[in-house]
Length: 192
Image 1 (cartoon, helix red, strand yellow):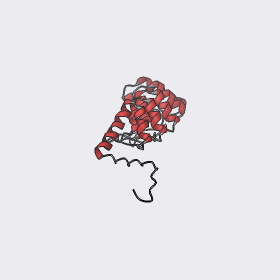
Image 2 (cartoon, rainbow, N blue to C red; image 1 turned 180 degrees about the vertical axis):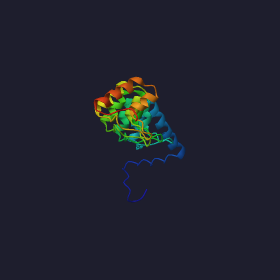
Image 3 (tube, rainbow, N blue to C red; image 1 turned 60 degrees about the vertical axis):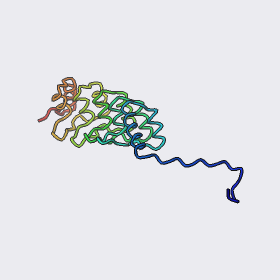
Image 4 (cartoon, helix red, strand yellow; image 1 turned 90 degrees about the horizontal axis):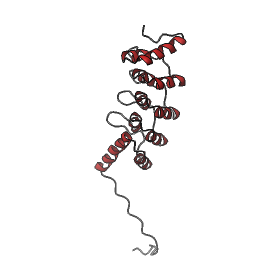
């Protein structure tokens, strides 16, 4: 002990050892699994310890995309509460809102939009959440997106509208609804 040291001072804890690369990799893999499985508690713990909320896997899926795609609304809420961006595209050009629209998960879609997800954010190929809802005949989701102002006249890179995409996929209810919306607007949802 040095002559300047206070003999009554509390001992200072040793600094925590830096995690090994294997430990970091295990935490990251566990975070993606937690997002897929909806483990909001695990996500909260690690986000509060500095896990990046926009972490992406090798396919470009964010934690938010995985939670939204697998219909885990509370995990989605946790990630959004910690700053996750709802409009990051994965490598297939999909947003979390598109994942929720594909699944027909209204609660997750509503939360994403409430927290800033863009209705007409388009993939590089031009697909939107409305197109995803139309393609899979998610008529409740489709009607909700239309009520919020999603644009049914948008076309993908191949020139197809949401109604065209619905017809190609055999989603006749969605195609009919979109045709009616476009007719009421004085436009034509079908390809020329």
